[in-house]
Image (cartoon, rainbow, N blue to C red; front, side, top):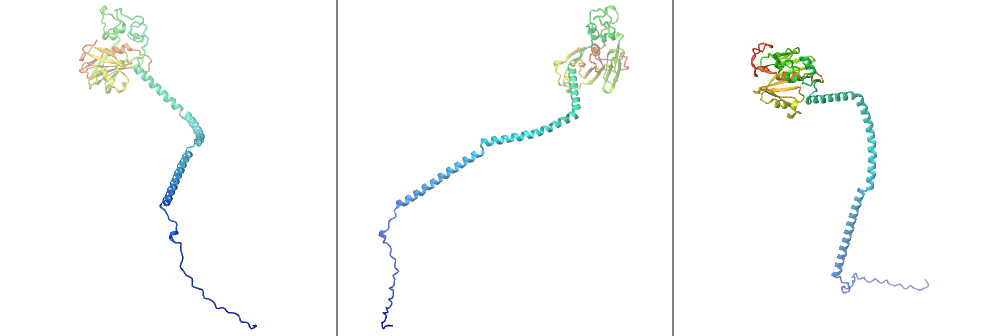
Amino acid sequence: MFGFKKNVKTPVAPSPVSEEIYVMPEKFHAKRTQSSSNKILLIAVIILVVVAVVSGSYFLYDSWQNNQVQAPAPVNQNVAVVNQNLNVNVNENINVNENANENLNANENANLNENLNANINTNANLNANQNVAPSPSSDADRDGLTDLEEALIGSSPSSPDTDKDSYLDGEEIVNGYNPLISSASGQPARLDSATYISQLVSNFPSDNFKTFYIKGWSLSFIETLHEARVITGTGEMIKISVINNTDKTSAANWYLLDPEHSQVTLSQLDKIEFRDFKGIYAPDHLSAYLTDAQREKIYIFEYDLDQMAEFRYPSIFEMMIRSFEFITGAVSSQNDGSQMSTSTGSTI
């Protein structure tokens, strides 16, 4: 504007920049050695071992802690106490129920139990009677005949030898003699001639028998049982029967093989033997069992006390046993023995 001109500079073009990158020469680089690699590897292995040891220790410690927690003694004791309390409560409730049951049983079952006990006692008495002989009635003169038997036959209850023949009255009647008459008197002294004796003769189709019994006692026969029954003047029953002995065993063995006598031993049986008969008495002496030489039959004698406490006619019972005869032939009448054939000969 004032006549001066500006100096105008011509722009200078930038010189081109070279793109080449310069790096440090390789000779100046730090060299990697084999030993440094080994150290790194060793450190890594040590780290892994440490980690494994720590992990294993932690696992073992954790397992130990778990075991300690599963069975701590104090906790178990407390639990046991709780169980005891629960059991006590339950038992108390049950006891209440038991009391109720006891009352019911007392009201409903008392009489039944008493009756059962009574039956047991009765069985015990029956067993005792089977093994122990009942006491005989009184025998004032100790001659083997009870006072009741002496009254029946007319012998003296105060003299053991009524006919003064040096034999006791009981011995005579058992062996078939009359204790009222001595053989030295010249009169018949055998029982078959005694006025107080009758003869029992069965009249079955087969297997008949005969024996003595007291005159005036009742007599009956039961053909289906092959049995004769004599009723005494005081109500006792004497039964005589014959059964087949298919095994031909002895009377003792036959008796012991009976299941009803399973508790009896041979040593408890008393023997009886006369003429060709052999047998035994039961332990109570209220029954006798005989066989003869052929052992084809068993002859049974039974004395029923009829609830009597005493054995009133023991010698008469033995007299009936020892005067027994088995009849092999036919019987024409019950009271006529003249046409009978017997296996044991004539009567005593």
